[in-house]
Length: 452
Image (cartoon, rainbow, N blue to C red; front, side, top):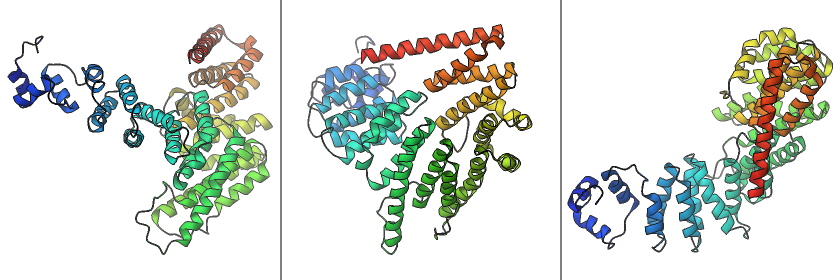
């Protein structure tokens, strides 16, 4: 007030508060809510949140924890991304017993509002306070932390998945379906096929049980029962889709085809609502395309024309299809130049774009494009088309560095070393710059580990 040469009545008017209330707040005879603090801050010409650090240290820390004051303050801190303030307030609350449930409920609000960093702080503290309990809330905290930690860094994605695995069985039956699906998808993007098989099978088994229970209870009113995000049969079908891909990746094509046939025939699903029909059609459609993939990867070149015709009008399927086609071409020495020329515009688009709108998750697309870039690099270098080969090698190395995918980085380095005599001076310079970036990132990661 002195700095702005404001008298109490003027400040109260600017803040839209009663002078008596303002006087009580200033004299410490009345609690100061975050709403009042925000109005006073604005009246003094500062942005909302300007005094939040002082509010924590000079007001909240001195008073007994009061959830009615702290809850809206935490929510505002989340909106302003004031993570340090959230840490301090949560530490104040966790020193007292009885706030785990309230913090968890607020964390859920923030999670659904996509304020993931703030939510993660709350989940971490709630999980810490309940780590010795075999509770569903602890499991849900770990599930949310797993979800919030999924990003571009593949090594961190893997660490988050491993940390969460042991908590899946503690979740509610419906949440288990989503969690198993998410775990399987993460391991799918990491190309860890034994893990994909493990969690996909668990997903299918649990979905089958839940589907039978649902069918038996159809005559019972279930207005208050929880509903899964997708029809239960769709989770079962997805488990077989994942298992089919895992089999194909392990070159067990006969078993992979058996899984495809399972989700191709969903005639046993008798519901006729719009959602059911939508998912039945999707899986029947995916069964067709994945049967082509299965046969192609087993060496049946004859399916190529039908496969290409099928994906030509399906933008979502172009990248996965080209990846499959290149993998088969390199394995069985097919010439697919005409197909690559046909989809040249799509390849250029994927090469230049960082984000792609698709049914698939961005993480899956990024990994798939790295794999495709690697296959295309091998295809071009083997054919002596070194300019194109090195172009995709450098792109793959760059994306692998950004996502901290060591497996692809090593593959790129090995390929470069084998063909480096054919690299232009520009390619050599670009490669050295990327390797310097790899070394810098590795040094930073090691430093971060030592500081923990």
